[in-house]
Length: 107
Image (cartoon, rainbow, N blue to C red; front, side, top):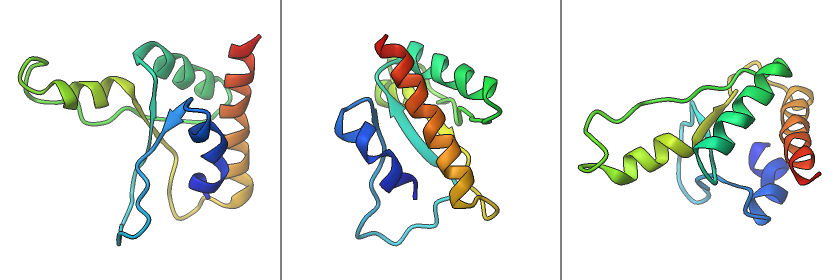
């Protein structure tokens, strides 16, 4: 559902996510990637103010010089809620809040 409902933002290059089509996947985290750390943090704070809990996961163990791609992913990624209890109505709410965030940014 996230892939379908967030495709507009992905097509506009506001967000990105790993598309697992064609792969067998047991996703337990749904990552989105944002343009930069500042946008990621603003979106996370906006969503928490709307009662949508998001997380940032897995800080790299090595330093930035040794693993720049891992740090880039860490700095720009955000995990959206995903679990067996989510229904379409809840996902619609989460996506609508992300859309609202980007709408507010355009003003």
